[in-house]
Length: 167
Image (spheres, rainbow, N blue to C red):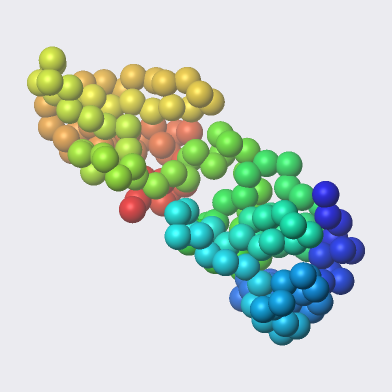
């Protein structure tokens, strides 16, 4: 496990831009030079990864190590949901439960709102919410707008973020 001292010897981090720059790149990496931007954006998930001493690290976790002197105990969240934006004021450490309260809308969602789906058996919209890994049924609704209102009220009650469920 790398330390804050080791990372600061080889990388500089600008908290205002979120960008890491190589001070002393790995001598085995012939293409890298001092002054180059460190890291590669993953096409698969959009996170920036930096290879350090043969191991790949998420840039947001290295930013936390750089600023706090330790790796985060929990997950790192990007306030603006841009996984490549590692500005310090855009990052925060959250538990899994806290991070799930800031989840974007699933791609296969057909209702346009988290926790709401059309149930064919009842011919109604069903609203529910998951908090602390427990699903709470919020009701069946004839109108989608009623289900959305019930869900929004529950999100407010359980302190979900305002961006929860946005695309």
